[in-house]
Image (cartoon, rainbow, N blue to C red; front, side, top):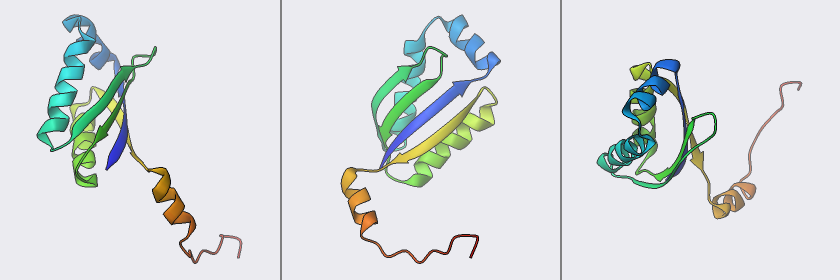
Amino acid sequence: MKFLVNASYSAEGAKGVLQSGSGTKRKQMTEAMINDLGGTMESFYYATNCDAYVTCDLPNAAAAAAIALAIKASGLGSITVTLLLETEEVDKATQMDVKYRHPLN
């Protein structure tokens, strides 16, 4: 399963990156964390606001939730984890019969 992880440092988390002087160390730590969960990191980028954007393959949604819980529990940042779908999965979704009534019915 492919995920997009967006991690945003708190002020204290950003101070930690500044003190270590290395965004590369955070990238290496992130890759090790993902690998330990049975996944692989595809990419790691910082944005100009110092948020980190990571794409990775993880074995299941529980592994993604474990990452989110660990980061949130640290108190040094916030995180969103988004499941990414292949185009073929969206194609399958368009063929499913969904019984839905909008709230105004």
